Length: 118
Ligand SMILES: Nc1ncnc2c1ncn2[C@@H]1O[C@H](COP(=O)(O)OP(=O)(O)OP(=O)(O)O)[C@@H](O)[C@H]1O
Image (cartoon, rainbow, N blue to C red; front, top):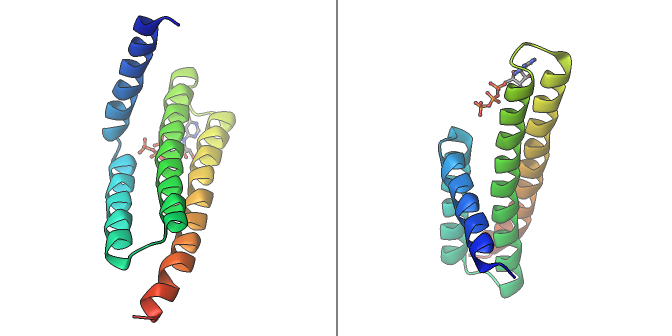
């Protein structure tokens, strides 16, 4: 295994996360993730619930970054207005929306019963 190549890929990946930080939506997701972690600590979750929360956060952030990557590629490939460019961007945004809705529902299923029992 080429360690130097592996390290270079790692640096590119970190640069990608820094690039995503410039997007307002990504910063909002980070804020929401920190809030979810704070609520998880305060509420007291089981190991399995923590695994679910961490998975949801990681998937949400990853999906947001993929959405941004798709937006950038679409802007590069189609700087002019095009129905396919619109469809690509709207579908990518729709994927983020679907996952965000599912995350909220799962969050409610985890937290609400615990808060009701307080
Ligand atoms: N080249 C294009 N052709 C047709 N419609 C487009 C094009 N670019 C953007 N759109 C439409 O405008 C919407 C917003 O696009 P935009 O690139 O501004 O993304 P955004 O959701 O505002 O993300 P961000 O603010 O992170 O850049 C898209 O979802 C799409 O419907």
